[in-house]
Length: 225
Image (cartoon, rainbow, N blue to C red):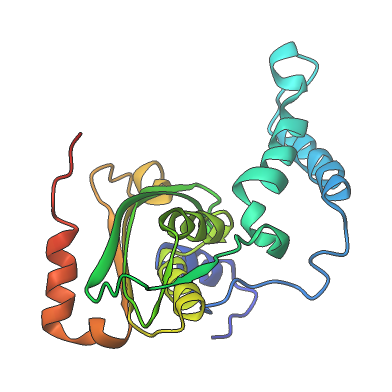
């Protein structure tokens, strides 16, 4: 998909929630700079934005904001851009021969909309059917967190989680459903605070309607402690 330099075209891209790739768009020199160098550059950029808005950065409450934002961008909310932070997902032989689907539901998702850099907050539900190997439960949470910690489109995030688990588990039998609120919709634009976005990706056996229905029924279970 190609766009010209028309500002309205770029605006519509974001408002229509269009993704251009299932891979996060990254430049070849994305990791030429160290994290410390990136923080120094972003700090100056944030300071410039705040000063342009007319804020007085000599105020004690605002003075440290550029540095805090820069560190947050690099080390926290966009930390998933760094492949060094990709979680190692060790697998184990399925010695107990568990042959049904395994479901990890209600995984908290904190991400950032790449069109307006506003939060995406929701829940992810993952399932897989073992092909002879299993993965630690917490690793599924970590995989979701890793791909969520970058500027994202929810459709892409859902696909990336499934592809990663398919590779880790050496099976196509993986599914993911994400239900999330986008503050670019809830707090600006249409400002619809009630709406949420649901995306899904079904691989292998989960393309079968009966298997898919079983998974969807599991994630409806109300688990309380």
